[in-house]
Length: 268
Image 1 (tube, rainbow, N blue to C red):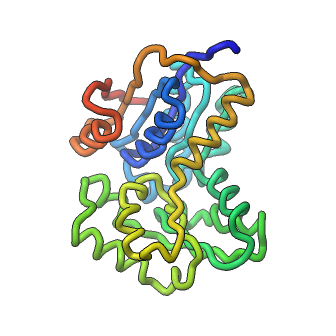
Image 2: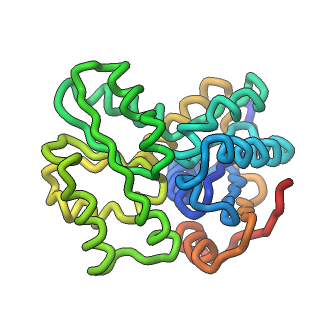
């Protein structure tokens, strides 16, 4: 089988998409990654849909110029509001993976009735993407979505896994909106970083769904379908940011180690 050494393009507003990038790297260690963190404009969840679409289109053009063989929208806000824009920009043979559809498919296969909870940014919740898509697949499932705007900023600042962050997380999860749920979707790619604290709140009584590994598997299937997989890592991962931040640099090292390329890139 022919090996395709072209990179996989991944983007997010900040460090959240690194959870998806890490899952892809774990599942497909022979694949080279180009990651763009739009740190100058985070958080996307507080922006209008039109603004997010503009940012997403610029980043997509940049990734395509770097000959990426697939585009992963590793951001729920961008997945909810800009997927169609990215899909239109990318050539037909280039797979575009968002973080919502694979997660919706997973929920549809596992749950036939009951109530599913979703936490995410204001943009994701206001779009009602998860609720619409889950209930389209299965009208018997109820979906309750809760905006948790403090959590993204908290995580971007590296402020988690302590008593104060646990108190903030608990305050959100105690809301009536999320009462009696069978599963909770972490509807923001930042949130896997606080999954242990969410698990602690539920004490294993509720499944906490981290979309990063689900998205990685979906991408792998699409690459295999097109014979786009690489049998050997050629070159090294490259990480771009629109603005260098200490938290992004530290988080990248946490997931990928000390030896990495981190470059500031302004996109017009």
